[in-house]
Length: 272
Image 1 (cartoon, rainbow, N blue to C red):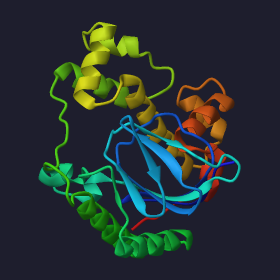
Image 2: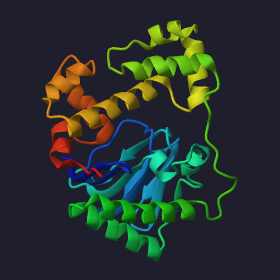
Image 3: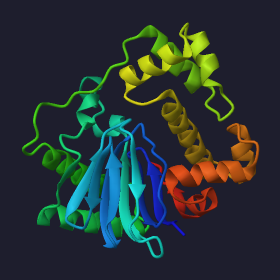
């Protein structure tokens, strides 16, 4: 069974070490996403319909809102992965440069210097770090990965902008009360669009479907509730629109790879 070995939430985002042996659903994150294999059997990762083999000599970098999923090759024992979710405002605090979080390549080699950084930082995460030490180590690792991703990459960083007022309105409506019970057809009507037009326009503007966008918002609320409160798992699920704890658990496991109880057991919040 997949499980969290270490999870830290902070202003940098999330730093996690997972043992994973189950596939995920296609999902996305508001944050940038770096994935490192640190033990066991390599795994496959699909990023925007490109299948990649993640081994101990490669790095996978996923841009904010880029659809992806995880496909283990060892379903019995799984493998160990060091996974970072990088807050764009922490990475580039100035609004003018916030889009600079976008990586130049999704898949690139893990140099010897980068491998040493990855293993040192993963060990720090597993060793219950302080916020100051982890912030410093993560900054060095993430900056190094960002620079490596742009080696031999074409073009310059570019972030999609949501320009259509109807899509902006639908995002606002979804963000105000994300939950499993929200009907996307009703959101489309509120935005003044037919269902087919809404789905096409939303995906064109954001790069993801309305359903995937909503799932991401629900997951953010679930993760926050699990680490910031002591509310029972069932109550968190009900607050997010799930009719049963088992339904919430299935949704969480399909997007994070493990049950919410396992995630909460390992998770800690690092505060200034």
